[in-house]
Length: 239
Image (cartoon, rainbow, N blue to C red; front, side, top):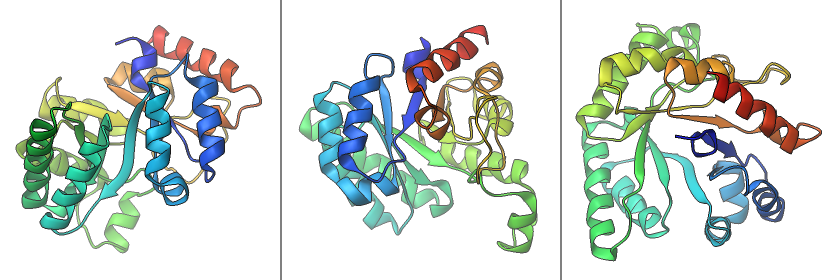
């Protein structure tokens, strides 16, 4: 895929109006925009409709994690919205993931619309081996946990997973090259560090096999976001 189809811009913005203006400014260079908790809590379904009116795609990043019935009903609703992709926590279990997938396919068939991609969240990029062990009482490390959760997501017939750049090649080897990998924690060299611990550059993530990379602050907070996009695109193409 061309870089513009693999780069997802995270709209980590609290204002619906500012988010819309950002999409309008970048729409000629990027195809997919991520709507997460912060923006959705502020702007709701309206921002999804506004992005669609600009003929852009939405990755709805709400990380569903609840009992199977609740998640399946929520999945049906977001399918009707026409989102390109949404995610859920693999740690919600096999039944939750299967019920979600069935609901999505049934809704898409009934409504005559495209089936969105369902992506499983493995281990958040803010978590480390120490946090897993000392706070969550998970005895094995991040790499092993990501591998187990990715295999579970594949068994549930999800389209792929979200993981840090450090686990991309492992997941591709474990789950196959057609199993999608969506990678946050992407930081170009000029971007300052933040709360994400397991990060990488756009070039390295693409080299490792990422299908989609998610970037927000590294581009949106640059003094010239369009220039930042140009630099990122060069990194991706040279990979």
